[in-house]
Amino acid sequence: MKRLAGRLLGIHSALVLLFLYAPILVLIIFSFNTSRLNVEWEGFTFDWYSELLQDRQILRSLQNSLVVACVSTLVSTVLGTMTAFALARHRFRGKRLLEAVLYIPIILPEIVMGISLLAFFSTVGMRLGLTTISIAHITFSTAFVALVVRARLHGFDRTLERAAADLGAGAWTTFRRITLPLIWPGILAGAVIAFTLSLDDVIITFFTSGPGSTTLSLYVFSMVRLGVSPKVNALSTSILLVTFVLVAIVARTTGRPGGGRPRSF
Amino acid sequence: MTPRTRFGLVLLLAPVVLWLLAFQVIPLGLVLAVSLSTRGRYGGIVWEWGLHNYVRFLDPLYLGILADSLIVAGITTIVALAIGYPFAYYVASRPPQWRNILLLLVVIPFWTNMLIRTYAWAMILRANGFLNNLLIGLGLIDEPLQILYTQSAAVLGLTYVLLPFMILPLYAAIEKLDHRLVQAAQDLGASSWHVLRQVILPLTMPGVIAGSIMVFVPALALFFVTDLLGGARSLLIGNLIHRQFTQARDWPFGAASSVVLTLVSLVLIFVYVRFFSPKDDEEWI
Image (cartoon, rainbow over all chains, first blue to last red; front, side, top):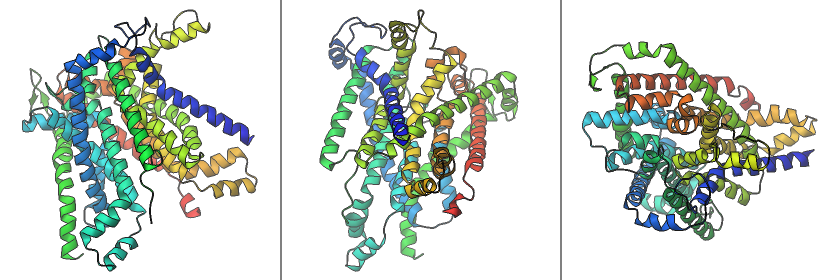
């Protein structure tokens, strides 16, 4: 009986993974299709990959996406980590309020954040572009980074810091040599989440972008009605390939996939 | 608090407080203000205050859209929970190195933009798409089924893009589950069903709540998924708001609809958390 239940769970999980990867497999297959339309299989080709490299517009949109993702990851990781420290280690007036405001992006429908920022930028007269998109992404990513880093700080053994201080280490040395290495996996996880959310986002980007700041998602958005070019499939396939290679390298260097450095204490 | 730590705390908090004030609190206040204003003749905002945008929302047409959105988001949440819970349970029961690989596999699809993955579903579901060809090839159907541009396709797409948001919190809760409690229940003669119902589910309820919220709320307003897969038949509140800010150029009504959406989701979250939070189980442990 228990065996059977385990078997069924295994089959179910395999099907879930198939479900998660079905559209991605279709994207990959059609990136090698001779037909201009993503409808029927006509024959094998590498043309879309070579055409992709010549397409200024699509490469530009990829570049924009990556710039926004990098900037927003960097800023939100720093901002989120600072916030997590303040929340995990201090009591102060208005803490509850800060938490409530901080986590708004996690429980508010994205579209509401999107239009609120659009209304704000147009009221203060800020030109919509990569800067406004980055600001928007930083705003929602900070909440997620703070949440993840705070969870890591929760189980933190502070006697280690006190030991370092007793042994004569200054505040900065203690932070750099003791605190940072211990919470590093949390910070890294936060940064990965921020980067991922930024690349994945459609709605908030849609409302905070302007002419000349087309990101990949907006580029696809403009094509969706008429049919998306197989060049987009080729690009998605390439990005996936790069991702897998990067993940494999990280897995190799840290010894285990997805895990950060092991606790060495 | 010594003056020194106080100074440190201020330095730590100042950037985030200023940031949230500028890009979260003021913008959301602005939405509230715009929702009370009036649409200008050419689509601008005229600062004539009133509740007229909210009164307009009471029209059966818009209330119907809101009701549809709640139903679609509700079904999506239930489906995601039904699919995600056994999966998360399976992942949590694997050896640690397998867990990491499986979790990674759940996250990797995110690296392909959500819109592109949604478009790929449209490719799969359309009349001459993958799924219909497969079913015809297997001899299960003769004529292609109309799957794309139905409410079911919208639910499928929403479930697809939001499933990882259900799986991850569920996994976090299930992983923490103390298996000695499960064993104790079994030793005391509880059936599998009772163990699940009275031990495992209550103990993993925080994950169920977190996952449900993280699926339900976005599902209300992912307008491009319902646009691409549900077609004209599934006009949800996200699509309504999107249209006010694009085609209709009626920001005040769009803002009022967003305020309604926000209030409804906040109330539902509150009720849900109240209703499903385990009450005295914590003391019990």
